[in-house]
Amino acid sequence: MNNSNQGYVTSQNGLNSFLTKMYGFMAGAVAFSAVIAYLCATTFQMQVLSFFGQHRFAFFALFAVQLAMVFGVSFKPGRSAASSITLLFAFAGIEGLFLSTILMVYDISHVTMAFVAAAADFVVLAIFGATTKKDLSGIGSQALAALIALLIVTVINIFLQSPMISYVFSFIGVIIFTILTAWDSQNFKNMYLQFGDQVNSTSLAVSGALQLYLDFINIFIQLVTIFSGGNRN
Image 1 (cartoon, one colour):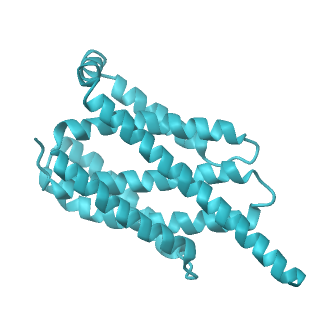
Image 2: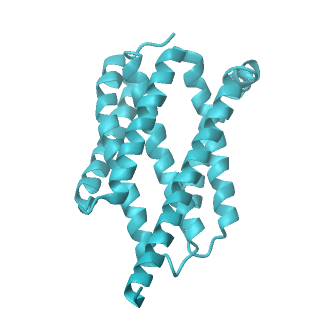
């Protein structure tokens, strides 16, 4: 085997290892959120409801903490892998607390169908994003612009309280986050190929895992609304 082939094999092995770590951290974060959500919706349901009932601003405070964590997990070359992993799973734990409300208000069959569909959608698009030769930066940028518009509509609907708006825009949300799943997979693959030998690849993998985690969770939440027809228990 000549040097060029050896270099290619080494590079490919390194990329495969990076992608395995990234998807592994993402799957671990999802599993951790699922466990927390289940425990909060069953074993500790009364404590959770009592806590939020007595501390009405706790929900918004935890959401603000999550936003800070998103910036914290965002890749920084100097951060240790341990710090990045800790922040990722702390974020996933808080998200699990929020997700427990879905288990409390939606039929479990709808939640299960949404999770399975979200997982299937995620796996297909993540593999596509990591393997396609097509540059997804253009469609990814369009999806980000559409996401901003979706967030604006969501904020407006907080005041309108329209189930129909929520239901209709859930389909758009699934499309947006499906595209972002493929784009994020390709984006972090390209980041590794460009900077993998200059940075802590584990920290980069954790940063990618967070982005993919957010894509998956948002696909799941939109699908819960779709499968339930916008109706709660």
